[in-house]
Amino acid sequence: MSTPAAIACQDLSFGYDGVPVLQNVDISIPEGDFVCVVGPNGSGKTTLLKLALGLLRPTSGRIAVFDETPARSRQRIGYVPQHPRLDPLFPISAVEVAMMGRLGRAPSLGGWRRDDRDRAREALAEVGLGDRADSHYAALSGGQKQRVLIARALASDPDLLLLDEPTAGLDAHVEEGFYRLLEQLNHRLTIVLVSHDLGFVSGFVKSVVCVGREVLVHPTSEINGQVIADLYGSDMRLVRHDHRCAEEGHQC
Amino acid sequence: MLAFVATAFTEALRQHTFLQYALLAGLLASIPCGVVGSFVVIRRISYIAGGIAHTVLAGLGVVHYLRVVHGFTAISPMGGAVIAALLAALVIGWVSLKLKQREDTVIGAVWAMGMAVGIVFISLTPGYTTDLMSYLFGNILMVSAQDLRLIAMLDVVVLVVVALFHKQLLAVCFDSEYAALRGVHVNRFYFLLLGLTALTVVLLVSVVGIILVIALLTLPAAMANLYARRLWQMMAIATGVCMVMTTGGLALSYGPDLPAGAVTILLTGTAYFLTVVWRRP
Image (tube, rainbow over the protein chains, first blue to last red):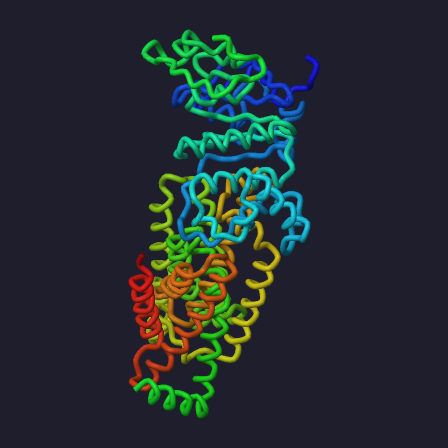
């Protein structure tokens, strides 16, 4: 263990009303990693993310984020939720959404400081939306909204970015640009994203956490038909999308 | 026709203090109506606001009974309304956080029981039952100088609270899970929002009455929402619309001696539907 773990699970189990969802999970995600969490619907991917955020508490075992409880590390976690179903009339601008990342850092009474506004605008510029800061949030496209939510997470100056199905409902070319952005951010942040789409993602990520009957970590180069079959059942076929190679190279 | 109504109304306004009070009450109540109404609309809690409004009758009824039968005057009817509304906000807020699935049923129960308590106490009180009518449908022409002071005080409370906590209130309305992750005590702010709604409802009850209050709280904000891109714009437009509606309702009802509350609501509702049709894409 050269680098400290961003997320470490020891013998972690969780169930809703006695129905087990995750059992005896032992994984460690080092700092600087770019991890994709995959698995079939209902396998517990989002549950794992919510445990890391401290929104859920483990039934047994423990989960640590930067060697602390998730609740204590919250200020270091940037969270990008699944595309929220939003009232199309909600009166808010892109920069106001991004500024919400400053909650918990800004003073709790009164308005925003200049500092918070500047940081939110910087974050929007970083995701390529510097010129849309004052646009009505609801009027932005799906991909742009998703970028605003990333900017909101970045505005809180996190060390770890957690994303829940960030590409659901996005066009393929928008999705690709989205992953390039994440790859850039990965130079300074640990990234963990939950996705249903393993095939596409694997060209960009460094390791894959497969959530199924058991939870396992694979380097991306090891993902092959057998892993997919174990995870999703034998009817799934692996469709290769080799966009580009990660550092280990895809020898499969 | 409109010019005639306007001149007749300004003439009457010059002569009658009660009319000046009524006008002022409408204008003062419009400020929290626009500000808090905007939160109610974007957080989609009109049904909760309706529940709170109807339990106000319990407070009014109990205080009215205590005054007439036991000579207890420490609490004014409006004070009783404030207490009942805040209690209802607490109960409904707690229920909606704890029992997510059956929330609407429980709110409906609180809504009806609040009214029932009010009706029982009003029927126990000897004397005229015209009070019941003025509680239910409002009687802005009965607003006293003391009521005006209370309305102004509640105005200040609502505005100060919103000025201090608007960041958190907006965050809780937009994405409360994310706000919680940023360390915002979302439940406390949810209760704060319901408390503000309760105070605003009481203010508006004196203008249009319990049954009609929900329309005045939500329709100006809903109209504003069709034009505003930011929350502060929505609040400003809603406040302006509410001022026009209460003043217009008063002016139109005064001449033909119609109930001011009902005319205000008819005016607001008509304006709302016309705006929706006009803005339809």
